[in-house]
Length: 451
Ligand SMILES: Cc1cc2nc3c(=O)[nH]c(=O)nc-3n(C[C@H](O)[C@H](O)[C@H](O)COP(=O)(O)OP(=O)(O)OC[C@H]3O[C@@H](n4cnc5c(N)ncnc54)[C@H](O)[C@@H]3O)c2cc1C
Image (cartoon, rainbow, N blue to C red; front, side, top):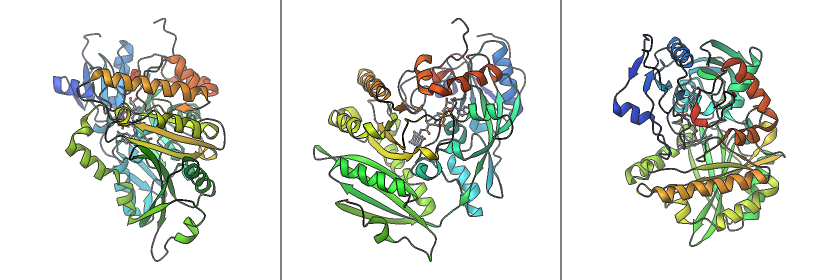
């Protein structure tokens, strides 16, 4: 890297070992690529100055949100990491839109919107990831069968392109950049601001946990409720119980008293064996992962490696892939406190060109949220190999692997992932960021630079 000095910026430039080590680590704790500098921009201009400086000198740059990637996706070996959480908070609700800085966490977005009686319709399970960090990959949650991905709820983005230009883009303006940024792995620029569509926020959430012994029965009920949309939120989990697998369908109906959900109408056609009911405020439901986080932090495994994989399976293959994977998965492969997610998304709700799922009416999110070993890198390497095996198997069956996954990915792999949308990304890249320097941790080199 060039030793030239970064031009003066309003934000901070950090070079302490602790800061560089921190930026060379993420939630996955599997890839460690230390940058040369960490920049905490104080403005969009700072972001543009850094990008122009870096690109002119061939220095890699990664934007970093909350650092919750599993496999170095937000790292830049020997380069510059832009800490997007340092942008000044700009969170404004106007009508049914909210405009936020890209470093805002979804929790911050809710803080801004709920006092107005409004909410983002599509939220991740975990609220402490940033708007920029999920908009470049998709942003999936239990309301996806109604509202699609978080990328489907974006009205406008402000982007600093890889050439250092500040461009506002939307469906109507600079459409190519708008389409290339949503789900485009941050290859064409850095998102600095997002305007998101909102819907009325309910007051409360009634949540049913429905238990099954049979995988086919569980899948059939999930298909039914996602197709008819009777619940506001649907997710599910295979659960290891006494050496076998049970299945939990998690279904939620939002409401605002005096109205209340009609339990009989919602549940009577379903074939679950047992049920639990919980009733909370809407926000407490959205914030449900916070309790689990506190437990895992106290117990220690929050800080262990996380070789996570998220896939989207075609409906035709879901039963086979899930059954085979579960048969080969025990505590060794998942970790004592690991988790598996399994739920369908209606593909007709997905409008983001670069967000890829298998063909067909339903695509099933199937995630193995493994906890690795804090002391045994060989064990973690084996878990990554298992991820690679699953990724290949899913791809051969027409499925897709979500970008936020702990596997090494090559340009050829991404090309296969994006399929017919690859030219969209490649053309936008050629126009807005014609180097391979931006967000290199994603592992794709769109520009043929002879390297
Ligand atoms: C406990 C937990 C629960 C999760 N639950 C969900 C879930 O329910 N649904 C879901 O979809 N995901 C979920 N994830 C995955 C998570 O949303 C993704 O890994 C996400 O990319 C992380 O966001 P981040 O803000 O931490 O970004 P980082 O990890 O910091 O960055 C992610 C990627 O985005 C790029 N990036 C970040 N900010 C910008 C920006 N402003 N402009 C351009 N590029 C940028 C980075 O360079 C990197 O490539 C979860 C992760 C964890 C740890």
